[in-house]
Amino acid sequence: MSHIDHDIPSTPGKFKMEKSSYMNRIRWHYSSLAKLTFWSFVLFLGLILVFFFKSPTSTSSPLPSDLSRRSLRTYSWGGPAWEKRVRASSRTRSRNGLSVLVTGAAGFVGTHISAALKRRGDGVLGLDNFNDYYDPSLKRARQALLERSGVFIVEGDINDIALLKKLFEVVAFTHVMHLAAQAGVRYAMENPSSYVHSNIAGLVNILEVCKSANPQPAIVWASSSSVYGLNTKVPFSEKDRTDQPASLYAATKKAGEEIAHTYNHIYGLSLTGLRFFTVYGPWGRPDMAYFFFTKDILKGKSIPIFEAANHGTVARDFTYIDDIVKGCLAALDTAEKSTGSGGKKKGPAQLRVFNLGNTSPVPVSDLVSILERLLKVKAKRSVTKMPRNGDVQFTHANISSAQRELGYKPTTDLQTGLKKFVRWYLSYYDSGKKSAQ
Ligand SMILES: NC(=O)c1ccc[n+]([C@@H]2O[C@H](COP(=O)([O-])OP(=O)(O)OC[C@H]3O[C@@H](n4cnc5c(N)ncnc54)[C@H](O)[C@@H]3O)[C@@H](O)[C@H]2O)c1
Ligand SMILES: *[C@@H]1O[C@H](CO)[C@@H](O)[C@H](O)[C@H]1NC(C)=O
Image (cartoon, rainbow, N blue to C red; front, side, top):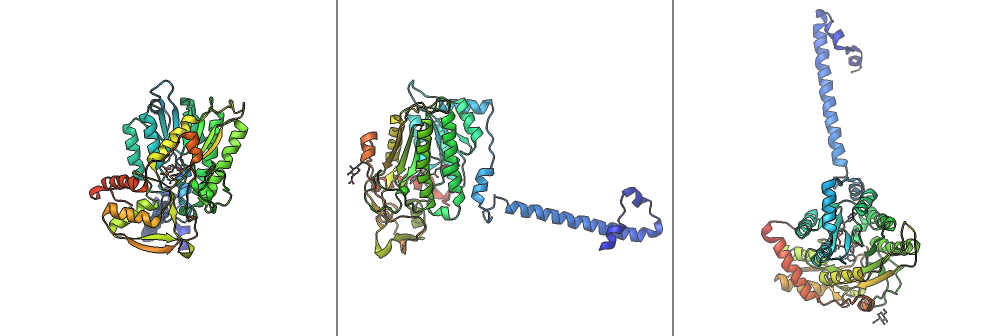
């Protein structure tokens, strides 16, 4: 092949001047040049394809694809029309209504809270990055639901500091309901960095922007019952130890509580952390057991029922979404103002942590029995030993503190709540129009 390199004419002009006696040789050269060009082109195309399939949009990528997908995606925001929507959505209907930035608004809890705030006349602006940790079409459907009630969800990441600053420039939010997070306990083994990205870096970013805002908003945010980790004293009370997390998810939520303490201490931010206990209900999260049990029971697929060591029962303090919403709204309503301004603390500010649970743990096998009755389908149960990958054996909330300070009083038992969930599930995924992924 090497002779080709030497014989290829350097310019077309020189090529044309070659003598006719050399035409055959030249023609041969010409065709081999064409071949070379053709194969280079094929190689080039191939490289492009390889690049595309290796890029973060591929699920088979060995890279931490979810993180890069989240952090590298750029969203379009800004402009007069966009600002107008932001302002309109955040406007309160009453004089002393709140103006709340709800992060994670396209999520399960975020959608319900945004709708409830809007219903009672508060201004609500959503923020969500619509990541594909679970089926994003469900997030889009929730977005459509909120849009109909006048809530605009800004598409963006809580790590985008320019976007957050812009939002606070456009609206003087009185409160931030911070729910955006990487949820789920077992997924941390697959994609640990997504937890650091959203639950730690993202939280710090939110607090940084809040501390610099004038006026500083009061912040209510979602921690988790998982912070109790390997704690065995029941029921879990806010004063119990939380230094033995059993998962990276729990560790990032615990870190969040400590970070909240810091921002309260240094900058005078009013901060309330809510430790949710297994929230369920309509528009719920497909990665949670009650949701995928429903899907699999209907499909006739067997469902894994975890059992602790020595045939111990695995139980959860399932909390219905409407009860959680009431607790969150009460936390917003009782939040005192932040005390800082210009990024400086002016006096001590409120710092709170509350359990929001249901105070009645239910064994997972009972959950399945209730679903069987509601779906009128017998479940194929496969009892398996609980893997040691983040789940704890049971959760049980002591809610006396939330009861006292927030007037929190859950009223929905699992049977009643699941009935509402199943009704929603069947209508949402009706007649195969949407398939539960
Ligand atoms: N559902 C529960 O049982 C439960 C229990 C304990 C704690 N929590 C906490 O409550 C909060 C809400 O949970 P959920 O069940 O509604 O979960 P969810 O996954 O349905 O909602 C979270 C939303 O945040 C968004 N988000 C994630 N990272 C983001 C980022 N970096 N930037 C912008 N948006 C981002 C997601 O797209 C999603 O829509 C979370 O903080 C979660 O950890 C939930
Ligand atoms: C629940 O917590 C409170 C403190 O908030 C405590 O006084 C009470 O004894 C606890 N209840 C139980 C049953 O542990």
